[in-house]
Length: 471
Image (cartoon, rainbow, N blue to C red; front, side, top):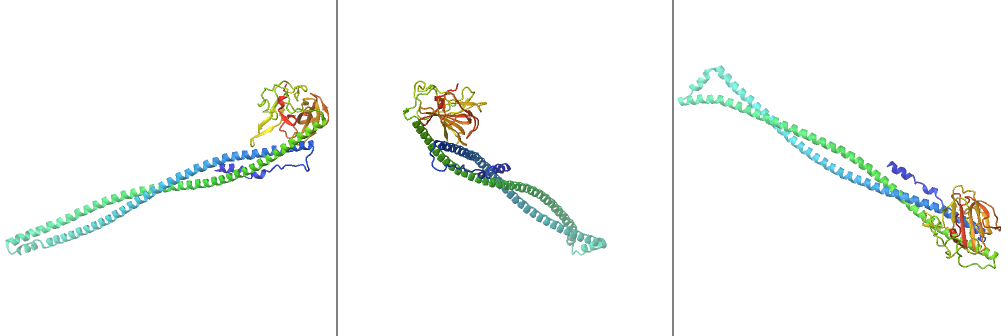
């Protein structure tokens, strides 16, 4: 139970540590490309932070749901124990009641035997008294016969009227002596029988008393066991109550997590919608810039063929996911300009995050509009322009891409290089293909040294791996 309570304390006051990441809107209407880029960076940062908070909430909900299931199982187990104890206590109560009835019955039998023993004692005493009386009477007769000698006997005999009377008197005197002896003997036999009966009753009383003591000992054991079971039952009932309290607390906690998760999900949707609107606006500004700088150029309405083999797969961990926007047309290399160059030249590197949908671990998937390139010792490595063009932006944003460069290639294509440690070009500068324009870094909203590289065509993001190829 201590483990349950200690685990329960782990998430107490958790909401005190969670706060919303409030959007920081720029005052006034957003009208410039730089302001829109800064706003997109800010929105990306807010979305990332709020997704992180939302993931934390959902992870907490998942762990607490597992804990809730554990509590539910524990409650069920302990309740089963309580039910089992109740059954055992009920059985012991029946045993105790049986013992009480047996003890009561034995005590009644002992009481009856005691009464019978008392009656036997009284009968023995009474018989002994009769024996004593008979012995006294016989002794008196013998003394009288001894004192008077034969005279009394002769008087009795001589007083007879006839020979027949004489014989009768003689026989009577003889019988009186024999009767007295017989009576005494009968009394003695009665006393012997009474004593034997008393011994039998006393033996039975001893046996009943011993049996009663045994039943009482059995009852005492049952009573002691019942006390133990009742103590366990109270302990388990207390555990059930504590577990139910913990269950209710965790259940409320999960409900609060659901409410907060819903708030964050709605907030993230709002931020994403705002970000999409800002992204569309920056595309509009790029198009406006391109239209202003090249008013006589007619841009194609469809995407030209990619520099790489269009049949190559684009939705894989190595290529960085699926493409979006207008798909690359079938055909050979892009003929309007020279081939695209790899932005990191011959530096040892790999793609850590590809283009397209990727799991955000929160509410499904998120869209990655470019590729992230990294590798051992990549920090500070030169970043090269993939094609010739004019730098639209070379600036710093404290969120989003950090130090980043956008190059317009003059034919509807734009390339972006983000999270740089330093910049080597400035806005309005013309750059050639392969020119050093920045260095790899980890500025802005970055989890480690890498280059974020994007390609857009007429404002629509493209899969860079359709145009650049790692040497």
